[in-house]
Image (cartoon, rainbow, N blue to C red; front, side, top):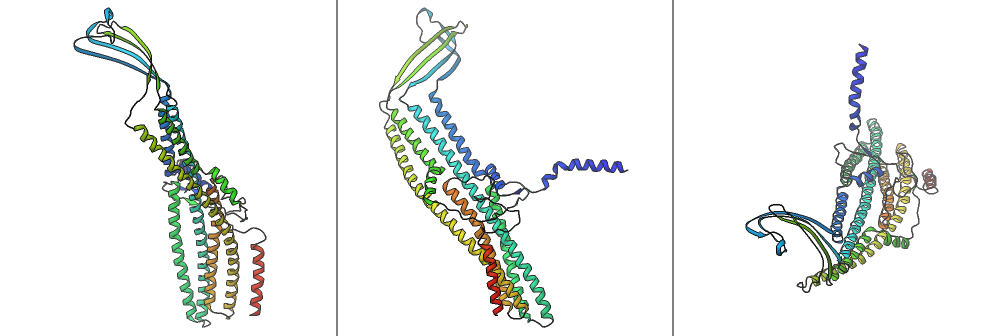
Length: 475
């Protein structure tokens, strides 16, 4: 009996084991999310298809630089007798109402003043332009995934802080309810706590709705199509270190590294090659031609023939087609040059804005962290005073709200700091996700709270508590 039970259990285990992993939803950190997006984003795949399209055009253009060989064969039956051997006279010519023929023909453009070569170089420039476009879109995708990801983590942290406030208010509600029952506190205090609790629960509901929206947007950017809902985890950066950025050097680096600027430059160069190609078509063209054929009447008695020659051609009048073509290409080249100048101004603006945003986030992180320290101490004091009967419930509720607001602002500033770092890298054209979160270096275990660099927040927290204790003692 035991052996049968063991055998059945083992059989069930081995049948279920291959599908056990399918029940677990995929878990993404920031690096895995960006890697997944680069592999599965439909928009990025569409850009990759544009590269293949241009490569196909380049391959077709290159064909004009190579010889052309063609085979031909035919069978024809006439109503009347015809001369069977094309171009042949005299006794070698034969007549019949059936004709068999086959042959090989060779054609090669020996010299055309670079017309076909310039066309090929222009096609190569267009391929490079599309490759640069793809790289810029890829970096923009990484940034957008990071931005939504950090926003999602900000909302998660705010949800956690809101839950903490709700638990604190519930505990305060229970204590106040007991005191109201024995007549130590008025019933209005309990009603005020319940109003504050309802507001916090409403805020929590709104945050959860926002989280769903951010998750949907992140899934769209990633190209996520699985049925199971993904989970997102994050190992927060332990310290926020101030980094010195030389704006002028960053602008120079952006001019050299931005792929969207390179894309315009390659398009301009490609148009220059096309203009040279059109101008070369005004000049003579030399073709080499050769052929080998066998022809026979219906009885199959084949005669061999061959030819070789040089063909020189030169267009005299084309209805101003080439002139119009040259004017169109020149106008497009001028338009792209203006776009190139505008793009440089845009790059300079993006770099300066990104650096200023980064500096602003540093200020916000430090100020909001101090605000959290203040709010925690204020709440502790107000609760103590309320327990001693030296203040009203209004001040406790205000302190609870101020602490929640301070924490929310701190989380927003904290993760905006890393978005600002990525924005600088994107503005310079060097955003690559390689296994770190943002441009920060040090990581701390998952679930720990973010901190500032040494020598600022921790020291201020101790000093602020001492100040509050002195104020409390005076009261």
